[in-house]
Image (cartoon, rainbow, N blue to C red; front, top):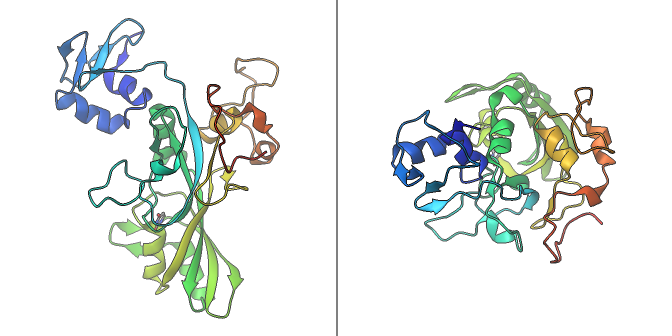
Length: 282
Ligand code: URA
């Protein structure tokens, strides 16, 4: 079936849809040996040979979906000019290149999704889906209700007002308070900037939830593969009924509660892996 080249490239897990367009216009993509620079050009992934920088796309590569508990001090880019540790350094024995769904700051920790399924990543990051991300923030000193209320209602940042958020005090300590902040936008350093806007100084920032997924028992620096149900629920696709392999038109999206009970042995972990993946639920 003919499909747009940028869609084929991002679905193959090379990079996002937008970055795929740049690969095309830069002349890095060829179809059957002919360089294609026009956006909107189509190809048939089942019959055409599509190359990026001379390397053939692995169209049917096994899809990999990972939940990593990122420690602070790792970057979510795939390379770093300063030689800092990369989140992908933590993914031992993963059989294909995966890249992060969105980003977390160098010093932010917690739940990070990684995949080689570009289409899935694009769906999750598309603003239309408004997937809620929840963070726990340790702030210096004490917070007051007015600060929480302002963050919840929206604060003015240099790139505009933030959308309404859910903000709560989680724990109060001698030196620091912990607050939770749930947002569905994905602006750069958004939680840190929201805190700064109400004069809160962030000591620690941890993402604890991404949509219906939470960190569970995955320890810092460890990861697990998502289940099929989790993958489909996150991107808003109907869950497959347990006894068939095909979705039906009556299947309903899986609720967060159901996911908690998902049988982990139906993980998307690639079959060929025999290694010891630490941090997976037993
Ligand atoms: N908000 C931030 O400020 N930093 C992150 O890493 C994620 C959300």
